[in-house]
Image 1: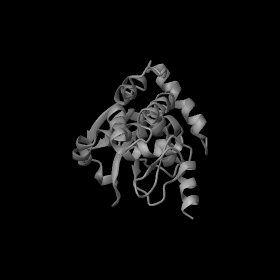
Image 2 (image 1 turned 90 degrees about the vertical axis):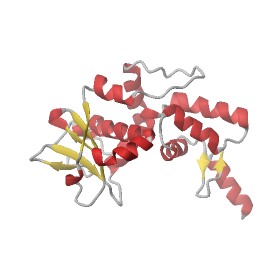
Image 3 (image 1 turned 90 degrees about the horizontal axis):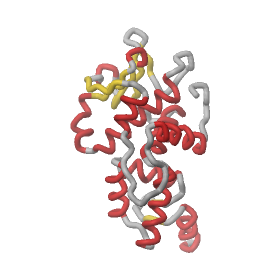
Length: 221
């Protein structure tokens, strides 16, 4: 998979659902969704260690949230970000899923010239820096994390159920979904947009779809 320069949403859904099936996370809607055990998947399914260490010395002025040491099968979470992670479990879970995405999609091929990673050959460490313009591999890792943490076979019927119950979903319902899946509202918003389950405009108005949003714009014009 490392040589893939482009991965469609459908392909990514297949990759992540295969992972969830292997850990026996049910993808059958039963009305009671649960969070994906991302730390268990990393540690037990992929035999990767998760450790806390300071890694700001790799930053070169950019924020480094995490890193991967492929030869040591280790994901490092930046100890300097621990307060942020403690405050927002969703940020921690997404970061771990993002790093797992890099492992699954990219890290297995060191010969592939990667723009999402900076590789320190002396320490044999891949670390992700903040970018003003994200390389494709970063978008892929984000997509992987969203698909894995908020599985489409569970999220879609949940949203449809809420639409039937509330007619118009509001932010309190969205924050409840965040609590269920242990993700951030930003991650949930991106996932909902990607699946076109809801659309939230820049003013925070929630629409049932992108088509509803564009239709409202047309009416205003």
